[in-house]
Length: 123
Image (tube, rainbow, N blue to C red; front, side, top):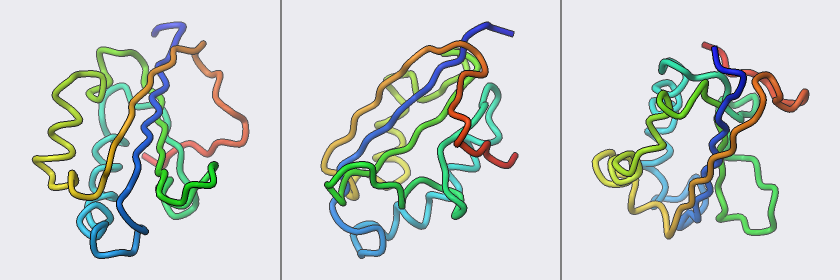
């Protein structure tokens, strides 16, 4: 096991509120997409509320800024680290119409260095 883990932060600018028609397909697929991550090799943790996702977390004033964060054992196991992942998520899964733009960032940290307030995902 590596001494480091990889944190991924995804930030997207959504085109409307989560309960709006433009977000319906994204909202309908969210649980399935999160389950794929939760059960993927190398998955450690993801940011979520009691509802099971991070869509209600709004750390900034912009209500259309949606974020999520996950932690992985290493970059080789993080499917989101390759250039093919986002086009597949946004286009093949039909989620592209929900976002104006999106950003992905990765940060390597010492293994086990997660926030004590964070709740591990149920696997």
